[in-house]
Amino acid sequence: MEKIQITLLLLLWSLFPLSAQRIEALPYGDFEKWTGRQVKESAILGGEVRTLYTLGPYGATPWASSNVWAKVSGVTKTSLSVEPADGPDGRCAKLSTVFASCKVAGLVEIQVLATGSLFWGKLFEPITGVRNPYANMDWGIPFTSRPDALLIDYKAFLPATGKLMKGTTFRKTEFPGEDPCQVLLILQRRWEDADGKIHAQRVGTAVFRIPESTDGWVRNRRIPVLYGDARTQPGYRSYMGLIGGERTLYAVNSRGKRVPVLEEGWADADTHCTHAVLHISSGCQGGFTGAPGNTLWIDNLRMEYAR
Image 1 (cartoon, rainbow, N blue to C red):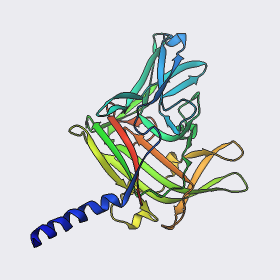
Image 2 (image 1 turned 90 degrees about the horizontal axis):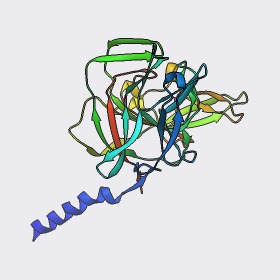
Image 3 (image 1 turned 120 degrees about the vertical axis):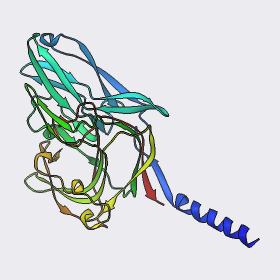
Image 4 (image 1 turned 60 degrees about the vertical axis):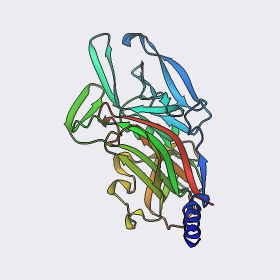
């Protein structure tokens, strides 16, 4: 009898943490709804019609992606690195690191490396050049919740050649390095000063890197959010630090101008956030640099909250 009671208590205790949590799906985080738009490339590039996919309804979704329409010197070109694919529960998202290549008039070859990315925010098109790619985006959305963790299903393929490529228009270089896939969620407190500059403090940090191929799908991966100064907490890695330099994020201020988001320090753990940046990508090396062939499939994005 006593053994039965102890077993029952242990069972109830094991169930308690589950009942103490609340799980919320992210908008379009099941990846079932996509919108395609048709873009015709310039005749000098062949004049083909390409389909660029958007997660959710076009113009009414918090999601943007690395699928771009570029128009440089009057020439229209597209890049497709994010698309719907078959997943374990219907559709999922497939993010790929690819070269967007073409020949101008069949002679001059252009190769631009694109890392497949989905992020909360907006992409301003057409893209008109390769300088400062982060300035073409409005990073983040208003967000005031305090999730304990981000939950995700994923599958990854990384060729792991030990080589990275950088491709910007007519130049392509190769050098040693690795390029893990990355899931990044940062919570910020933002404010705008009298000059229109946007300042930010880091409130919460959740970063997960995938350094190698997986054996099929990984379900319910939990990425905890570290509140306050993440540098002082277990699990902190150097790539979880404040964002700046070439990777400085941009946002649109109250005057309608794109300006840098100046992430200036770490907030106290109990500080309320105003914005969230969620960025999922097939690599982590930054603009036009990565490992061609990297592929990341993602599905079932959710937030975990304490009740």
